[in-house]
Length: 430
Image 1 (tube, rainbow, N blue to C red):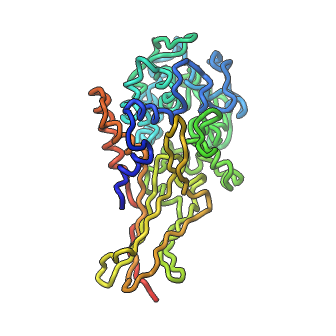
Image 2: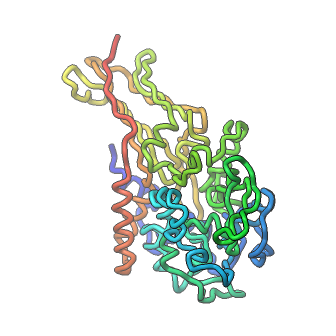
Image 3: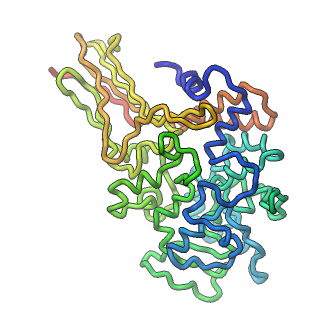
């Protein structure tokens, strides 16, 4: 197998590229590099409007209300909490939420959401904090969406220092408050019996406003679907998960994002980094058809393409073995399931897309060879394949000590993330 790292670098960057350009290329995936303050980011929820920014006390009573205004990002400043609230009630820190919601907090701590402000992201943004805050903000709107997580906020045509900025809160990434707090008002799903009655008087932090929007896939689309104006190589946005789901049978059957990613309301959001979750999404079968032997992989349980997004890669390998269990020269095949993209001429382009749409499959087989007695197959998942190659490229350039330390840790995490969901050897019968 070719060295994956060198292959990806060639595909992404060509033979030579300046480090600054590499960084811009990577951050461009966040949706843009404008340094002008704005609230109409292409990843914002459908119909987001400036008017919602000044309605901190707005009650989002209906799902259309939520779709229009809940995911304006950055999430408008919470403002001053009621004077009667305790420090615990007023806090936006997830560890303080755990005082009353320990199970949700424990789940959240294990998730990619809690690490959304990752070393890989922060290692790049540290270079842009002072002179290109628009680039920084274009990433923070999903990776740390609260205004209180931003060092600066829009002020006319400028970025002004944010007196409510909490760097510790930013480090927490996608926090409880990012999804549940607007204008200090707590929002959440209906009770398990489906009721949405107001909380009793005297409830902590004024209780919770309940709505079915928390059980609707559109809730997730704010960050998991890039909108008009974002990069869309070959007509498909870089982040296109909601649209992939919307076109699948799962949408018609009422199987929403939360069904699989928040089972029994657990705050887990398992995905491509979780072996059990990945394995549950596909059916893997040994197939011998005519003069070939190999695997058929079918997307039988994933409500979007397998895998979604452009950063993972799934590698399938099938090889034939002789009577001593040794590989037979030339009797092997490898197949990549991935969306390969590159930044060329100032725009994203799609090089290939071999991902599996829901209910589709692929056969990866090798012709039977003389002396073959067994077939061996493996399926490896590289959740951070794209990121790993970008970090490798960045680390060969000029970086500040802070940036180099963060990106080195990001590379280490990316190198440690691959796993196998299948590895099996079977006898061949003729």
